[in-house]
Image (cartoon, rainbow, N blue to C red; front, top):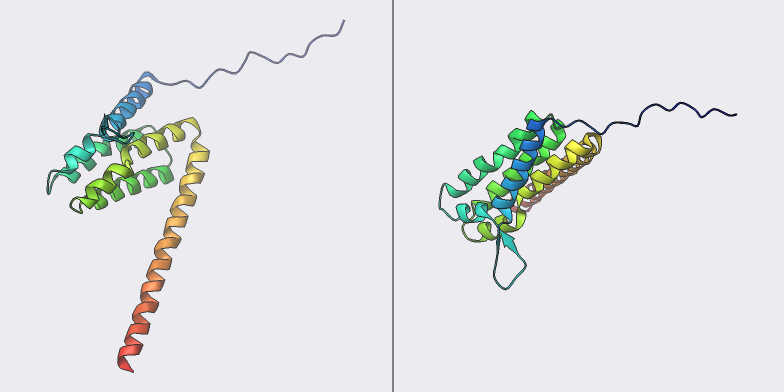
Length: 167
């Protein structure tokens, strides 16, 4: 009679602390209310309180960024990789920078949905930290290359303009 190999007990699912579950639920709810709570009648486009708050001149986008910063704070407390935190900060920064432009910025801000993006990044980082870190690192490297190319193009353009003006 052949004996079956001893494999041990089945692997236990990852243990989630109650506070982690509470924070994840809070982040999901906050992202929904900030970016996707209202449907614009006659469309499938959703906006949230961040868009409404952003309409307040001068301080609206600042207030929205501070509230959205809670998602980044939770991510740091839960040990999300630094590359993912950097990507979240970039999302929030783009949201704030674009929202500063009157009217057009508010429309672009409504489409960007930084809080929903950051909530998704947090979920991905908690599910598979290595994959989320790799994706964020490559995104940040790509962004760095784009900034470098824009800077180089500006330098070359300036040099050509000065050369043209001098004769």
